Image (cartoon, rainbow, N blue to C red; front, side):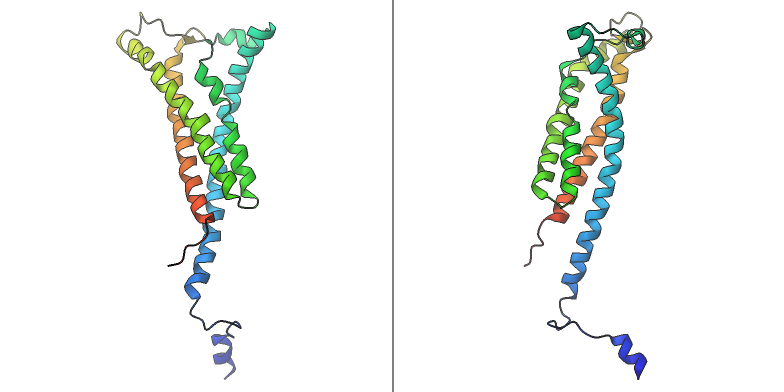
Length: 193
C-alpha cells in the first residue's frame, strides 16, 4: 500500500543503512559545537564587563602617573596603586578574541591558542594575585581595626574586593577553559576503531 511505502522511505544511494550510528554521531557533533559556542559566549559577557572595570582602574592610573591626567571621579574613589598582576590580567581579552574568531569556521588551532591564553593571561595572574594578597588578607582578618590594608573610598578594604574578584574571575576562566576543551573535542575529527 501507499502508506507502507512512504513510512519505509527510500534508502540513500550508496548505503546499505548500516552507517546509521555514524550519521547520528555527526549530527551530535554539530549539536555539541553549537551548544558549547553558546555557553562560551555567555561566559565572555561577564568576563568582558569585569575587564572594562579593570581597564578603567588600571588605565586611569597609567594616565595619572605617566601623563599627569586628573579626573575628579577617579580621585574621589581613592583607589590604591595597581599590582603587576592587574596589568597582565588586562590582556585577558585576548582569549575572548581568539575564541570568537575560531567560532566562524571551527578553527581548532585558534581555539587551542585561546585555551592556553586563558590560562596565561587569565588564571595565572589571578593565582599570583591570590597568593600575593594572602598575607594582607590574614593581617586584615587578625586585626580589622589596626590593619594597614588599602581601602576603597577610605572605608572598604581592597583585599576583600580582590578576593571577591578572584572568586568570580577564576570561575569564569576555569569554566571557559572547560568548555573550550569540550568544544575542541567536538571539533576534532571523529576517530574510528
